Length: 93
Length: 248
Image 1 (tube, rainbow over the protein chains, first blue to last red):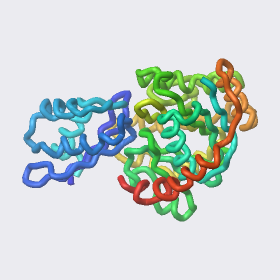
Image 2 (spheres, rainbow over the protein chains, first blue to last red):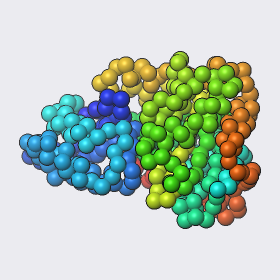
Image 3 (cartoon, each protein chain N blue to C red):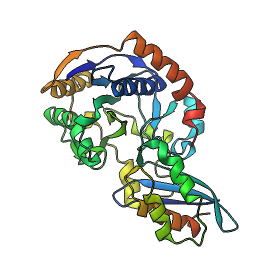
């Protein structure tokens, strides 16, 4: 399990836990004090991240997150991409 | 648009969140008037953000030992510690077309009556993005919203005379790794209405209601029997369950 806490500047806290098997993301849990509208889209965001590998380009991750039909409040797709990068790099084991 | 003002009703934390769900749904369906409701609690509690991890936010053993009711909200945002009589919480159920689309603008506008009420009693409160009400000495309170197709739930909790030492025993503030240390210390700085004005809590609420209705048609009301019955079953099945509150 690889996890990270990423505090968005002037924004909210993103806590990301990734279950990585053979360099593939197999499980994702995103928590924090952010807002998301509609809130039911959290699962879709987590599923999007499950499509990636540790070698995936962060640009692609961000693009994929931007395709989710939801409003991110207190963070952006780029911020979540950054959290993903930190988690993949093993910011905190 | 005629507002219903509800300033009564002492319930469990789970019941309050169930009432929020019921009234938001009923407004969404056009079954009720827009409503402002003040909360009265029975026990100390922790309303936590919808997307927060249960074990990261509360000292689980301590809350269980003390019988502190932890409830996951419908809304995002952070965990707060609430004590009966020591915080002021209100919910606003309002048609979506009456709320600015921009989130920052909407938070500022929805809490404006409360900020003005505080200033009138001598508390130099102001809005701080995204969802806070602050005093120069710290954070007085925070708000959170849920947006449906046609209705918005906006609820706000402010510290009136909160036991902040107890709060630090209940919440795991700053115990999770946060890269920005300045933010960590800011989160610990709570400012309380009573620190700045010697005004009875009920008078603060009355002043808030006075500001709120200033430019609105309104009548004082209660929850209906039907609303209470629906809320009671949602409180039992959802907000009072570990399945909901401990799901993350």
